[in-house]
Image 1 (cartoon, rainbow, N blue to C red):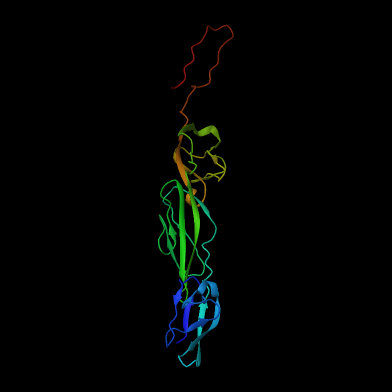
Image 2 (image 1 turned 60 degrees about the vertical axis):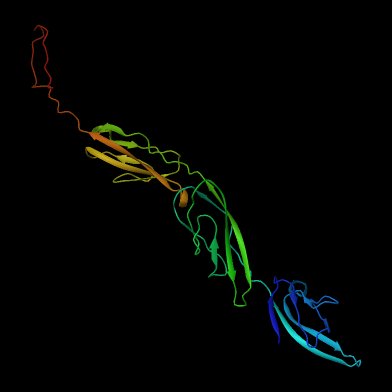
Length: 239
């Protein structure tokens, strides 16, 4: 009967009846019953089996062999991620394949776990049962650490304050603060602000506390009137 192979299948042994005949055609080896799918290449190949009996009579039959190419598999581009437990969704083509490698699930959810280099492989088997795979390199680096600065205390009459986070280029968040870190003081109390830096697996943040203290109640006393020749006076303020 006709046969079907994948192009990367091993050398196959063909069987003709009666035995001791000769096979010919693309992918066959002279003097053997071997057929090499890779040598034949993808496509439909017609092989001929020739047998000569003891009377010198020749019989010929043919067999059709289909050699299927491997599916084209793409795991995507190499990636660089930070060493934080933040999941990354990988996408391979064609869909419905399977991922393998350290830190990745079969459906492509990759979670970094340690600085270094990881090889992630995407495998796919097509409707002809032909298999192929592709790999990407995931480089895992240490993230830059966001620092919002030390906690600070201010008086309520300061007007405004500009907070500075490190590394530069991050974003501030919190009640009343702009993304660039500008905060207008309008009331006393404790205010928590967050500085966020990075994106994706490199995203991290830090908090700082701004304490706004009330101004003291001060009294200089009542207005006073003196004569120019009065003695030195002692003034009293409260507190």
